[in-house]
Length: 154
Image (cartoon, rainbow, N blue to C red; front, side, top):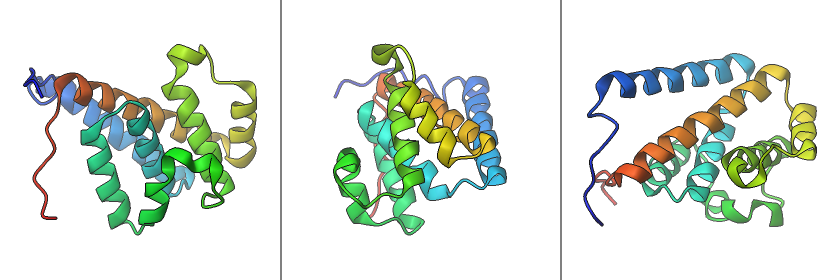
């Protein structure tokens, strides 16, 4: 893979602002009562769509550390074809896909919005939308920079 200019940590003011945004999103999600595992699924699904290996590595590791099932992570890309995901998780995944693919879809479809607002409170909905926005930003930074995977003990 071609080495590229890393646009993240080389501009510390902007990187720190993104990290602060991420911390605020996670705080809002916790205050709204969003299950942390849902946030990790949002991060994973967006990272799959955006082909961000760095974020997939990070968030699969984090999800497993939180007790997420490896089986659910293995089939995440085909979540619609399984019964392994809860109603809230399914709504969050559909919303994440719509937000991540907004350039193609040109909108979040009404049925996706309606299902998300049916199963989440307004505060939870906002937190999940912000999580999708944040991870899409991280994905774009890491993919553009060809961020290398960290060393991990296997």
